[in-house]
Amino acid sequence: EVQLVQSGAEVKKSGESLKISCKGSGYRFTSHWIGWVRQMPGKGLEWMGTIYPGDSDTKYSPSFQGQVSISADKSTSTAYLEWSSLKASDTAMYYCARLDKTTADVSEYWGQGTLVTVSS
Amino acid sequence: SSELTQDPAVSVALGQTVRITCQGDSLITYYASWYQQKPGQAPLLVIYGKNNRPSGIPDRFSASSSGDTASLTITGAQAEDEAEYYCKSRDSSGDHLVFGTGTKVTVL
Image (cartoon, rainbow over all chains, first blue to last red; front, side, top):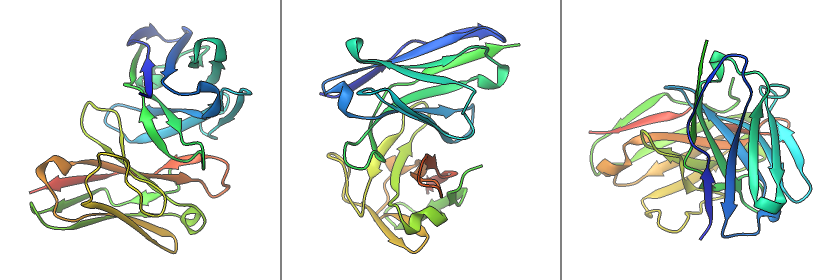
């Protein structure tokens, strides 16, 4: 059974750093792109970027380029989303999602979400 | 801002049919996938590709496409279909994925 399990909720202050995780199981972790999605309170879904754990090829959506860092550890089948200096506007729910092998467009499997709250 | 535009909200009577549209230039080239999201839950894939449903998704969900517009149709809407629906595809460059603006479906 494919599963993506995300790390728990975080409460941080502006300026702090943070790294949240998404651990994949039940499939070959290195063979599927994994993406990160932001959902700000009461707002829609935003695709942030994707990583291919097999070779760490990473693509950032233009709005998120330079704002976050996406990485993956093949040895632990875990993808990460990282901020070096959080802002209050980073307060959101963050989801990871596995993309299909064929087109790398379709996300059938999702993590449960990690709520990040940043206070100013 | 999203390159895929959806109507903000639609309503449908129980058992009737509703169509949700997603408009964007990239849809001329790429298929959309569709996601259902209920409050407090992660998104759920309901349709992908030309008109494919993952295992467990009822056949009342179907997809179609014409030009720059993709559509999701719910035929015989049920109370449990009340949710936010998002399309997803590539942006106009083809390099990045992008979600539509979302449509809130209310079942009356």
